[in-house]
Length: 450
Image 1 (cartoon, rainbow, N blue to C red):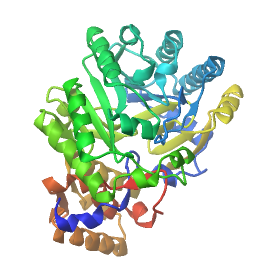
Image 2: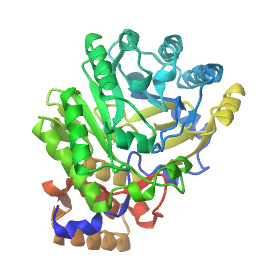
Image 3: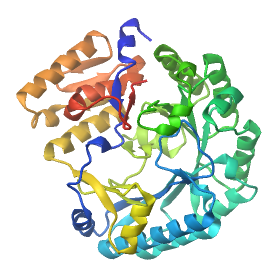
């Protein structure tokens, strides 16, 4: 990394899985507005469905997800009942319109659910919203809960994309984050998935964890590559103990410094590229034949709450506590508290707690930032048409500094991130984002740029 880039490493920047960030959500979006947008869904409009399962068997100290540890399955089953009711309510509002392109189960730990409950949720989606054979079904999995035969059961239910939370294979790192899982356990999961015919397996890796070193992380990457997953997502750990109490179990003194974080990120780039994976956006990687790589090559890569994706749907309908929907310019987030969520569902009310409606300016900013993150190049012309002169001057000054430091190059309204600086693309995005300019730094939705 060039010396002049080091000053950018510790800058806070949104993850841009939504625009505006969830930090900007407020009470201006309610069930009535969300219902209005759902009723406006077009007959053949592509839909992406997200189902949030907020339960885990054990607390991982690094985790920033909306979850709780739950070992009483009766309470899990009560939550599933609420999910089924929410799907029914939304289906009634949508009225048979839209066509599902993707279904994604996230968490928490979706495979905490028994097969019958997963089947019930899918049946409800099919009955209320329509689920055809060409829809892609994805699920996030904890390898510690996978048993022999689980992969085949999931494949028989229709799941053809499976993601394993690997994080790191080093025993010392695993102890430091309270997530023990042997390499052999993950290898057995992959073997079972391949036997079940799954051809799209993804691993999540984390850098910046306590006790990580370049050598230990390099070894972990090499072990992960040896299992030949089809995709990787390599995220930087965001340490926010004031916002996320469980992270207070992690010793600050054991965390890598900013420059070592950059070295760890660069290691992932180098190792995965050498193994034949293509870089997708700034933190995903895929084999050349994978659908994600095809989307990048064809200029249709997209970014949403699942990260970089080949999902064709602009509209997302989220189910479950804390799930976020995006329908026709409106973000609507459900209650985060599971009890509040269930009480609203029991009252036959959509459990919307907050959200935001995009302005015309937000729409253009979102388009510019999405293309920057997905393609490393964007045209600011349309965005500048709705940008006040004072804000344009601020953006020009920020971009001029980035250009002097060889992070970007500009030609008129078009800017492109230089190849070696792609890890700084969120910093570049924040420089053209009027929301980020006024945002506070240490929050749940922001993290170090690298």
